[in-house]
Length: 421
Ligand SMILES: [Zn+2]
Image (tube, rainbow, N blue to C red; front, side, top):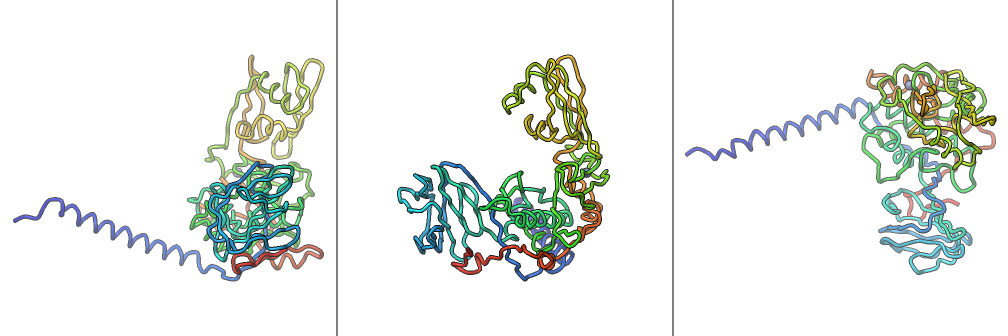
């Protein structure tokens, strides 16, 4: 009696599945061997990330909370409690948890060891500060710098890109964050969680390979002349990266002068063309507070060394409005006019903006770094290309060169109540 037909199909399928699993395990072992050991020592620098401001309320869940602390009096308000979709809001400069007034304008939620806190749809490591002011809330995540970076990389770079490119991004993002922490430009936080600083979405978006890239580069930063180099980066330079001096008027720094880049030609943003009518441009400028009537002409009036427009002159009757190109593309929409590297074509009923690249153009061109990673360039070679003269250095070592500055250290999830002031 012959066996049922279906069994004949199942066995090859099972064999194939087993082979696939074995190949996957072997590939993972080879990959781990390729990347080498991951440093185990923890630097535990604190970074404060603004998650939201001037919001009416936030839904917070935390299965295991160690403590809720009143940051004004430093008194423990609650201990050993848990939240499940509790609505926090502000009333007369006091934080309200559901219907319970916490009788203070500032609280800190400290999770139990290893636990996380969920705010709306995102889960965060570290601690959460909630501030009430003028009937609105500000929410800040206090988190270990390395954990922070694990929540940054997947939002800033495709997680399937080459591992050496991911490592370069981890070092660049760490350098940028460390630079801003030292800069202390805001009293309550160091960075925002969006493209104004770096995109950060907490534990929710962490992925295995991007986290591995962070672990593998632990404490590594870019340095120049003994100081932390701001790790500026952008999507696509469009042929030449920009000088930080020309873009933002910063001090002339050799690694940030800009380099020729032909690596990003395959970026979908390498070249673009957008048509805008004079009426659309005028409406947006007026909405942004500019006095602008019927537009008669638009001309680029100044260029940077890398070919980006510095200023635009907008002619309306006898009035000439001078506006920086960065401000102009911000008003028109950064997803419409993706960079200031453009030329203008005047047509009968509209203007064509023919551009290259996406972003400010300073520092590492991500699509260029992708191409270098595909060509098996090492992380150090990618960084040397985009930041010529800069070194990859140890963050702790570089901080020793700062006379009056240091990064605050923190012990967060290692201890249940390990908050710092
Ligand atoms: Zn490029």
